[in-house]
Image 1 (cartoon, rainbow, N blue to C red):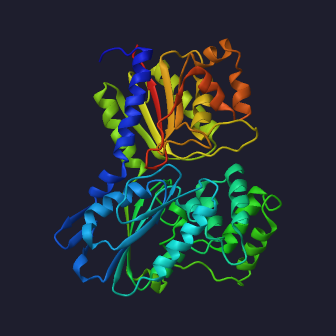
Image 2: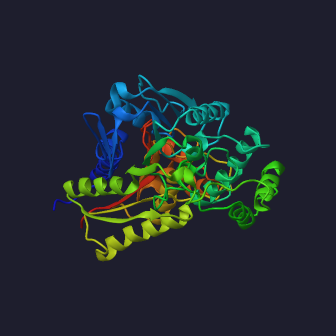
Image 3: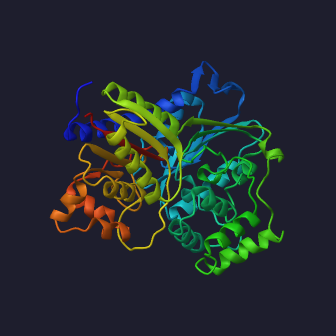
Length: 447
């Protein structure tokens, strides 16, 4: 194989990331699982005779919901009667029949609250001879903020801010969100019943757990109010949450508020759930692209979780091991991982988990000029910034110091964005209209 230079590594890393991003696009993902044959729509293992339904509707929420609706609109054609999807601001696609509402993410807003009410009304209007398609993708939980009775949008907003900063995993956050909601945790499926329901899902959750993706609005919920209380105790956040939130969950745990629908509930009798895209297919496409660029490529895992800095140091150590011994794959090497890490926020800087990952890894590979680290969110957004992530190499920390920036201080203050902005190493894609978690790359040159 040809020896790779540092500019080669950086250029190849960006190309490999974009290959993974393309594989996660909603249009190709839906077409890979759904096709139209006359009056029949085949979705995974099920087939729907479109001619026998009185009304066909599309509902849904998520960063990719508009792009998913655009594809499904084309498949359904004039059989589609109406629809409504909620998307994050600027995550739009041109739609003909389906109405689109832009709303706040990751902290919900009034647009999302009104959109969720409208979706519930559309679901409740469906009758026994109707078919409803629900399109779910990452971000759907924040974009469907319909508070439970007695809670307000402000309560939900405050709870979201606390959960996003305490270090809780997406599984833990969504367990709580489901039990503060009148639409999540299977409650949307209950509203659709007795109409038939087909949910198409673009997964942004480690392990593709259906009840966690967008807080599972159309699937059975195995969690309980007591589980939500346990998570609050685990992170010691009861005093940080609104009093109304803790009181509501306590009442639920005491049996005074109905639990979310469970697996044997009748509302799931006529439902289908089909994952059309996930982090795994993104990583596999990156693997093929890396191989095509001449790398010994290895997919580590799509299930990476944990504190961002800890996971970053593991990746940095693997880069140094390749340079030292040629293991686990010889150079030129490309290690690929996915999943979603968490950041316990202790500073007041700007950044996101991917930028923090790259900065922590850059410190770990300091001086290893033959290595490059890239980490980015497939949705084009990393935390509350306009960057998807960042890219670094063994010279990054020295370059930062030459410009008067202290990399360790920036890391300690959760302030990676200004550092990478100053270096010109932010990865900015704009909204991608998809979301299948993160893609991380470690590239190491040949000797």
